[in-house]
Length: 360
Ligand code: CP
Image (cartoon, rainbow, N blue to C red; front, side, top):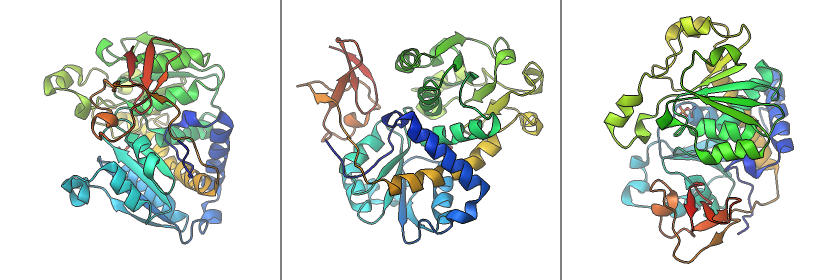
């Protein structure tokens, strides 16, 4: 299935050279934003946020406004016809006829992919459930490029809710494409990084370790990426409470870290970083959120300037086979073609929307 438009659903759909040129553009925009102030004059961006957001939504809107464009959209689906039962297909079809570029966040995995199948303009994934968050990853890569001067040879600790954290999934996929990066996953056994992400890391030639405590890892890290325990993704409050407060970065733990380690967090923070850490010059999470505007300005310019369409569905349909992930968009919007690809093993199919694996 070929779309006329260039979408950003997953960074892995593009070669590393594409990300590099986008990051270089982000750096140039940061140095001289005024030069880009009229690049999107007359263009309209629609932001469809089916799930709450502060940074992603407002940084996209700021990015478009700083480029001279205008914005439409909703940040609460209850105030749109979604509340009357309108499908993603219909909402996307309509809004994409009003706008030049569409940014979507949704609580269900694969929703942005579904939107891209019918949109009449480029679609950007601003986070789909616990699956992916590629524009946060662009923000993270831009931050590393500016603050660490490299995207290679880094030891990166990722701490917290690694099973539900879409930001860490996208970031692992991206950083494992660069030479010599090593990942240390710090989580409880219940919140470990999904197997498909670990397989991608290995396939890309990077390495990872899994540990239980921040103390045993922090001293060897160049980057510590903290994450929130995502209450909204747990099946019950009891399961969430059992994980809450397991990892708290405080001044005492920062004493164990290298002098040039940086702390990133996609935010929002709840209680996993104490406020006293904010004054440490290694705390880079507010700067990271600021750089998100430059990353998204670069992305909007790049996506709008590209003419070539992208392949939206690459897999195949298998009679009677459905995705087994209840939080996959194909189990919420029945009309969607249930497309799967092989995961490298001939007995394992991978859902093309949410990457859930299924034995056949
Ligand atoms: N980092 C991030 O996605 O933040 P928001 O949920 O506030 O957009």
